Image (tube, rainbow, N blue to C red; front, top):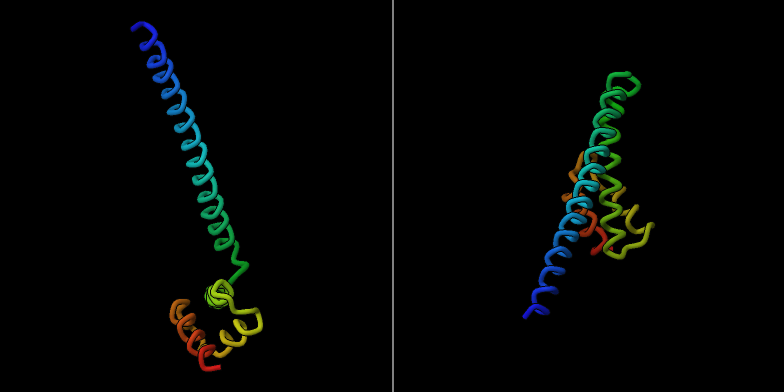
Amino acid sequence: MAASTAPTTTRRSGDRVEQAIDVAISAFLWGIRIVVVLVIVVGSFLTLSSGRYGIDNWISFIREGATLGAVYALLALGYNDREASAAVRQLPEGVAVADGIKQALKALAKA
């Protein structure tokens, strides 16, 4: 019976080591997340407070980001660059990403 208690003790200390490793990995990943969020927030604040970009620039950035989102979605669905770009160019300005993808897919289905 003494032999059966030794592996159990080893397993328990192994579990503690695994738990410590899991906690260390989790803490490290949370640290990275916090640093990334801080960099984004501080960078955005500094950019906004510097006055380098006006509201027109920010609207343009958002619009271009939505356009790129639609293009990337079409590329992920298997369309090539030319087809995706042509379909997205036909979209009206200010369309949301999800609506733009739907409209682009309808245009590509007709072609």
